[in-house]
Amino acid sequence: MIKGFIFDLDGVITDTAELHYLAWKALANSMDWAFDREINEKLRGVSRMDSINIIKNHNNAEVSQEKLLQLATLKNDIYVESLENITPNDYLPGAKELLTHLKNEGFKVALGSASKNSSIVLNQLEAMSYFDVIGDGNSVSKSKPAPDIFLYGAENLHLKPEECVVYEDAESGVDAAIAGGFYLVGIGPKERVGHAHVRFDSMLEATLFEVKTAFKQLF
Ligand code: BG6
Ligand code: MG
Image 1 (cartoon, rainbow, N blue to C red):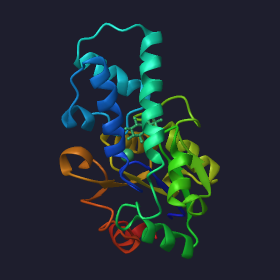
Image 2 (image 1 turned 135 degrees about the vertical axis):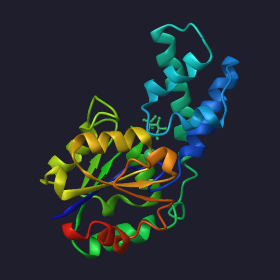
Image 3 (image 1 turned 90 degrees about the vertical axis):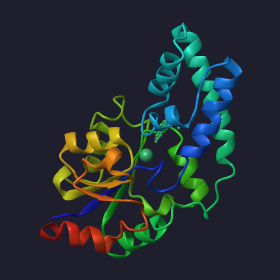
Image 4 (image 1 turned 90 degrees about the horizontal axis):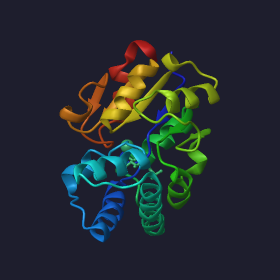
């Protein structure tokens, strides 16, 4: 039986992908590196250091580990500054309604995000009260596609993976949740999250009613 839900943050609860894009773009420009929306798509769900390595490799750049860390920190400073602009109006359509339904029906809810900035984003959205457990980039050392962040969420909700539904918009996140033995709702196009158990184009369609219908033997 499903007793809990675990949510990715970026691209599921709110759309921070654009802010990540702008921050990476500013960093790339300062280095004279090529960076566009196509490469940005490859960074969806991917940790900060893995992201900068993807960008560096795309540019065939030679950069020391120390310098890479410095650049990632610089990108993060730009990104964190831009988070000040997020307001409680910036939930993805349908996300706030879903979190409210889950609370009203007594489901347990955790966050399972790769971002080390999750708490800042949730505070800006005034969304903290929807979550019983916050699992983020500071909670585990192995990032998606390893299942660790979702296992952390389930464990701290005192639930087994097969008692939880995970919502994910990233290919690496879907892989992580499958590896952990969770039921999985993919948000986005087939090419990206078609390997989830159920897929919806956006959060607006991924209502509690639809998920209960899709997994009806589990509710
Ligand atoms: C994920 C985003 O949620 O968090 C990635 O989809 C991002 O794009 C990753 O790189 C890490 O985020 P942060 O805030 O720790 O740099
Ligand atoms: Mg995401």
